[in-house]
Length: 624
Image 1 (tube, helix red, strand yellow):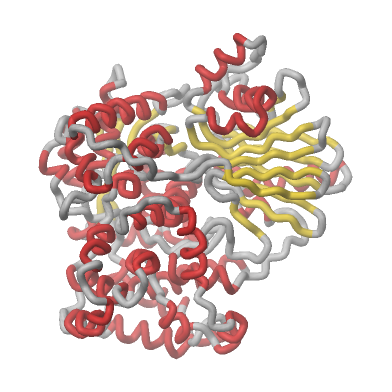
Image 2: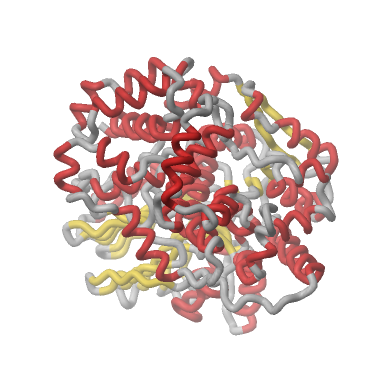
């Protein structure tokens, strides 16, 4: 696991070296164990390494057998030993025990087509010395990140934005279109970033830079077709059991201590079960808890750990401890990112890193197996006229405002808000924050004039939905969440928080063999009636206690609504101060004051709207 970076630009060797080292220092948290650099004419690449496999001889960059290809690599290819054996049969020899050397030799052997042979998570850059050609690729689901930019005839790439920004004279003009996306989606989705002309490589895509021309191509697509013919449910369960078992087993490859996150939810519980099955010693599991009862799940994690007999580590955080760590997170944000679960995920990663270097995670389970309540909401909304949103909104506004985690009034109000939008956009409204009408009030007059009244979120969703091939209406939400919420929120959160603490997080439920199988299972077996994750829960009955399977979904949240009124009130007032808002020039300070006031007066639950703004303002302050 590493951080990679590089550029193609005519500079002196000394200038190249200086910039490379600065880029590496900015992301040293991604790889504190080692560093490596490559320079050839106008091509310069580097990496910071977190040693996981082949601790002694796995130093990068690594060359191919013919000496023509050189790689810097971030990630893990879990089937590298099988691929290595095939290459050895073809006459290839190896100097290390790493997957990195396998990847570069697979590229020598097969070129771009090698990507389809890799089972894992990765973002890497391979330079062809003879052709003076740079090849950069990202894994199927976007587990590992990659940013890039092409400015002033200079191409620059890096695992994180902060590495790219170390290159001199980079344009850091904030993109208003992407700010618009952020306010709704709570993140800036790939391929965009918060800055103009700096991009993220999308999941399942690769770049080819040759003779000054940059080509961006998609090498992998999600497909829900063809659906399997109707089988006995037990057949599906047996095959699913086998695939997840293999996925977890693959991810136990490590030369350093390994454990698992255990929240007590079904996803992490199942991963912990399979990991325990393949371990010859007690598996180390990790969970955190909070002193806020409606947000605390530690008792479920404790119960599951006792059931499996794991070596369980638990830490309960106070509100003060959580708040005190927020500046550390804001200081490390590349872009504004408003998923509030970033905070507890960081705390869990930091706690876990004290004991192990690699941890398995249950992320991806909700998007693959249909675990979010929004899927049922989409089903329900099909039977409710969109015109009824005004009636529902009126009724929901009569409900008392609650600060509890995913409270009843919060769900009803969100549901009513989404009804007036088309089904695909509705999914993002339910998950996100500001809708288009709210943004028209929020933006300053200057910003509104530059945006020309366009609905950028709808445009992005409509364009990407052209690739969706499921025939089931509600299953389109699964596709949307795989494309946006999973790639741009969940996986970003896990990657950034784990790598901030130099911890490698692995996600078995996103093994592409598992995902591809589940996508083709009939939609009715994923969300059956009112039961989310139906097929996964049926499998879990074989290995997990009923109270874990059937407990209500909570999510990994923090008490933002309460904090705004109490513990963080002054911080919010300072960050969203009218003078600061006017100075940055993006928003209407009067509207923000109204949001704060109605929230503090318990008239409205504006927690998500205010948190999105609070995160952005803190990002702006740390940026300047």
